[in-house]
Image (cartoon, rainbow, N blue to C red; front, side, top):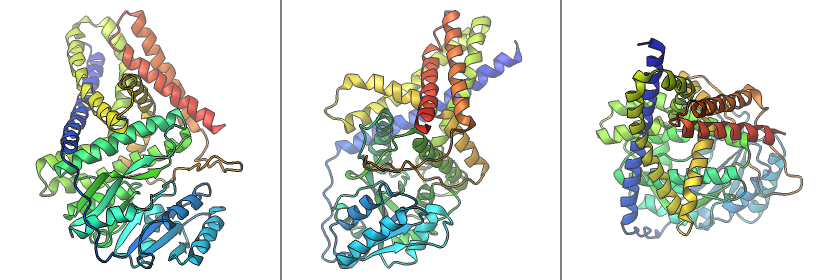
Length: 484
């Protein structure tokens, strides 16, 4: 039996097994989330007789399209003004500085306590700005909103009471809403994926008592929780996930409330989406590298450790998908020329049933987010989402590998477009680069695999290659189109 075909089959099988295990983990979270939704909604804790001091932090870096919007939205928060402090943590180097200063001056004149905080350097990026801001405020609780968020006036009155009924609560996280969900295909696909995270993953993990994560924005921290967990660290690109695990390992409890929605803007162009995906996937790998060992050495229950492992390794699934995809084309020829592997491929077809939980997972989120939507639209949209997610596998795999290797990279913030208006600045995250060319070449590579399968009359990998071809072609096309 030739060694190379055997090696290809074994590697492909291991990748498929990893995907099946990941899929089963999502199935478990879906079941837990459905049980959570079946329970009666808990009443909002009563409003306190005396409200605590709250600081709202707005970390900014070159956000002239949205800076006025987020400052005005937080200035409109319904909270006792003598107990509220808004910090505009502005590391900008462009017109954002003047725009922020003008809005801060305006609201100061209205009697609001609002500070325009400028650091001497951008050291530590967002984590550094948050840490610097904490040294200049006396808030007992810290709410954080990224520049693309537009919190509703009642946000603090709906979140702060959860801290006051339980001193072990360190974070209250809310669900992200979508201001521009229908702007483009990319925004609709992102909303589809984010809804699954916020309506299934966060709900299921909370219901079972597993570790969840602060999502970087749209939530409130207890100041003593941040301090007890060691403060904001600058050694990962996902400072939110890092601090979340340190805090929960210290025994702090996180509360997640999906009924409280914090509206936000989704990236509408590919370079912005890629910068966000790079930061999230690389940061998750860095956090896994930093905390997996501590998690398994802790006294947490085995189920919590297993779910935390899948949680921290979530982004690593892109590496497995990319490896599976690269192996799948030569496997077309193995299937055609080595009849002795027929049984192996039949068994792998059984393993493909492991993808069914993912269909269930995303369908449940789809129905929760769109209770009056047409169910018959789901299959096509799910396949489109799956295809484009596969198309991002090369970009995200690079980020994951850099994270696992511990290689330092800059914090590239996601550009926000804001309201469509004349004179709007188009922020860019860089040129096209060689990776876009590779994405185009991979689209051709999978198209070749698709053609080979049709030529040999073997439809086993045709669906997979169809999704890969379209996904990589779409990502390459949008990258080029949006860079022009």
